[in-house]
Each structure stands twice: as structure tokens, then as C-alpha cells.
Length: 127
Image (cartoon, rainbow, N blue to C red; front, side):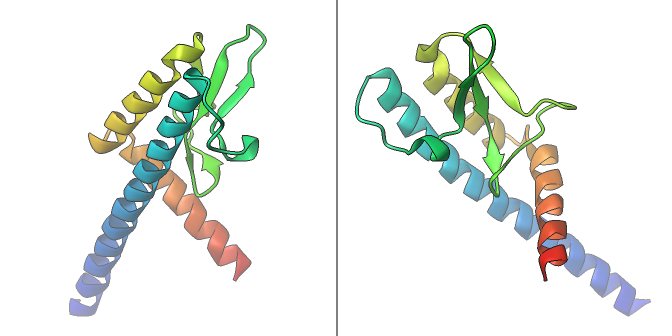
């Protein structure tokens, strides 16, 4: 019984550590995206290559799509939805800042946990 308890405790600890690391990585990446969004709005030189930016392409109505990515894949924010819509490009930095606040406050923990598990499973398949 003690071995089971130790294993379960270690598993929970490992998952908490992984969640915290993933959250830190996401916050770092969001801060980079925020800088790039501000540069875009201010018409400054691009800070990120097109394939590194999380915003774009536009939908059929001309709205900008913002994907929040972790381990290179977008988070599923709601069932089947992996992006947020920005109707006015000038609102992009504000939306990215709101995403940062959502991560800090734990509002995206469930989505982050799901993405961490998916990432772990994909790593196991590769090994």
C-alpha cells in the first residue's frame, strides 16, 4: 500500500510540476506575442516571422484569428474552437494581455493540462 501511495503522490507532484512549467512557457510565449502584436499595431518592423506569429490568418469577414499555442499546437479553448477573433487589429495587444491574465489566474489550467497530456502521449509514441 505504501508503494502505491508513494507512486500516486509522485505522479500528482510530477503533473503539478509539468503544469507549472507549461504555464511558465505559455506566459513567456504570450509575452513575445504581445511584443509582436504591439509592433504590428504601431507599424514597427516585424519581430517574428509569419510562421512564428500566433495571429492570422483572417476569417471570411476580415477578422484576425489569434491562436494560443503550447508545444507548437493551439489550445482548444472551447469544444472545437482553437482561436479567438479580433475584429480590429488595434485590439490584438489587449486580447493577448487578457490571455496572459487568464493564464496567470488559472482560467486556462484545464486546457493547459489537456495539452500537456497530449504532448506527453505524443512523446511516448515517438520513443
